[in-house]
Length: 168
Picture 1 (tube, rainbow, N blue to C red):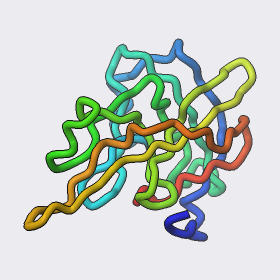
Picture 2: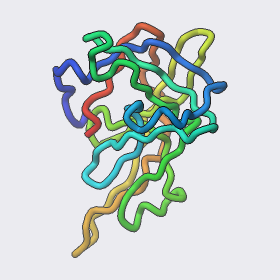
Picture 3: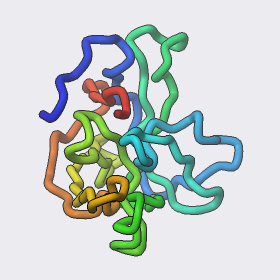
């Protein structure tokens, strides 16, 4: 991994419930309800809520600290149902400037995205997405959106642990 996982309690959650494609974005569920989103300059994840009325399958999380924990009730939206703006600099135009919603869990080497959910089985699949970056002479670093992939990653079932990292 490009960066080790911190041992802080807020970087690992619990997969509470998996909700499928019948779910829609809710205007009352703002960005602060989500842990998934887009990657911005400085290589950090900025949470993005699902647009109201649009398909939004997601994994809802629990926290070791119970309802008082920072991850309790947070949603990791599926990159299969939510596409967000991605990349920065002139390479951001690649792939129409779009990437699946997700998180930088293990550093900036790749983005982890929820790629599929099965509500009846209570399972969620994750995938890794990559990008290309360059640092042209006399210019700032520029990167494509994270769109190269997915490479299958660790699936989870309800009540399993989910590593969310710090988002950087």
